[in-house]
Image 1 (tube, rainbow, N blue to C red):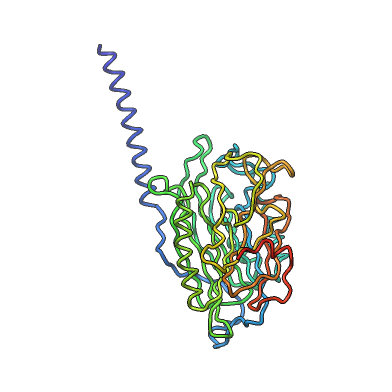
Image 2 (cartoon, rainbow, N blue to C red):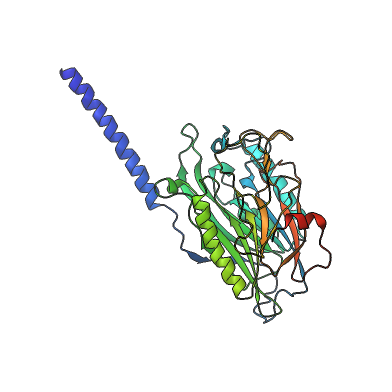
Length: 376
């Protein structure tokens, strides 16, 4: 009997220790939890002349502007990778492969140095998954002609999954670069986070970032970079879209011009996927409402090629599922001239860049391909 009591006492001590350690871990993570304000100013790093301070407007209504949006997957989701959170097994690539991915991503970014606005998602500052590279600094230094702003959307001290090889520290976000120096204002707006406490301690704190520019007619151009939730049943994403909707309608009611780009983690309206492996990654397959945020707004995307590939397996062209979830949304007073997904074969990211040109005046001739893809 004494032996049994000793065993039970020992088990009780072990169990109590485990509970205390776990409670201490949650307490530490809660204390260190990233809690961004609903609205924060974004620090700008710019080279060149500050056109706002001289009193001149930055953009004319006669200008044609080019845009490039790309989720670079923190240089960790190239063609050789699958991902444990999407039905695969891998946590991160080797350090050598990670560096290869980033080198080629950087080469592509530098080759696009004539683009007016570049919107990037999943850019790391200090994460285990990307070997603690400061990718933000590297991209900014590689693009000295650009004005840049960065907004954090992922800052967790330690992600414990998977238990055998934890994801570890994550610090990343979204990055906007503009050749038009010094926006009048740059801001980070909070969106609904991916999850509530305690799961939310290890998940993203979503946001969108805006750059504002004065136009020649006294109104403003508002350029928004966003990255919406992926792993939810659609409830969280809808809350994010509702918040964004209020912003978009408010800006348009003021007579401003709005361009939104990024990773929507949702199909554009009118797009139909042909998935071979449905539900394997746990991502709910949904499409945007054609009248979001209101009638007259335009979705601009290239439906001829996938902008994102699934991560339940390393990429095999013609076999691995591809979908379109990266695109642009334009207010009714902005008009697209062209749009193209840049086919990089998913070599260095699970996303491909999307390139677009816009004007503020209705083009006389609209490309037939774009007419079919730009839903009003």
